[in-house]
Length: 419
Ligand SMILES: Nc1ncnc2c1ncn2[C@@H]1O[C@H](COS(=O)(=O)NC(=O)[C@@H](N)CO)[C@@H](O)[C@H]1O
Image 1: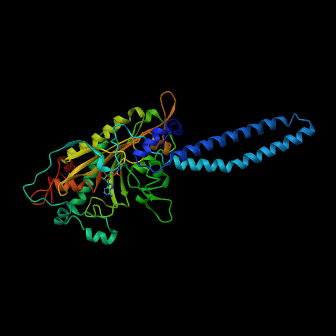
Image 2: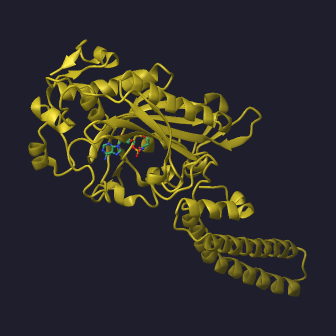
Image 3: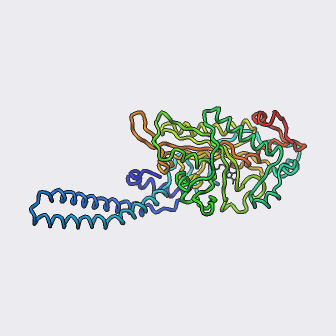
């Protein structure tokens, strides 16, 4: 959500954001509803003032004047009452429209319509060369008996997965590594829910617009979040925090559920794109002046973890058409997947300004007592099973064993190889 005052004073800036982010919104309709609501409220205030002034005259009035004043007071009261439905309807309509207004993208964001126009910023890590025919991650899992896609499909349908033995341990090792790595950098570890109320999805900006991505429980006011960003972002909803309590930084572990509506046919094999996965999420709630520093810190956290895991990666600046409605700026991190011969997304680092905080009611009182909206940011820590795809493929040996990066060995009883 943007400040209505900003929208009124900078309609062209907002119009441009609507255009470059390809958002369906008629800003003129919003401005019209807003202007009508201002006029309705002004008329209502005038009527209320008249009624109050009129009421003050009654006690001092002569008997015959009194009757006329009381009649006038009743008439004013009826006019006031008659205006209320229109005022409420305009307020509701304006709220719906305001929730659709996109955040203004940073000047550094490339202008573009789809992920093809994301701009590579940097790469890191030599691409692996194999003295043997490398296998893809599904072949590696199956040769070790580490997965059972057929059986789990009987249980859970398509885009499901199950890991066995060392692969199950590897998944948990990656999550624990991410949680410890971030905790060592001051992020508070959280093990949190995925079951959330709908308003938490409006608060992050997933709704309106992303309803088809989210599983809803039949007959319940609960849904399954696709990322721990959702529950974490609403933990302090509606509160006014002390500036001294900021920044709040969380490493949030949770299950993550996604319908993947619209992804038919993409990544249907293996671990890349599943309905239920697990992720350690980086989330920061801070003051405006600290926000860009946290964006850089969270991106660096992801890069340092990938370097420790020995995964070649690249960082992209997401274009305006790919970053989503609420973002000021966004960088994806993609890891090299040998079997595909290309980099695939494993992280998304986003800065949302106060756009989420306005929707969520996240405010703080700063040093001079002024109440301000917080700024929020998030980035993937490590998400499994997707990051296991590059991890297994890049570290596979000729005999199919998987080399275990130093960073993960403490979580795998010191093992140097799996399989
Ligand atoms: N369907 C899926 N299956 C497996 N992994 C997924 C799926 N969807 C997303 N992920 C993983 O989760 C990461 C973050 O997802 S995201 O939508 O891009 N971004 C977020 O959720 C943000 N909260 C930052 O984590 C992705 O980069 C990817 O590694």
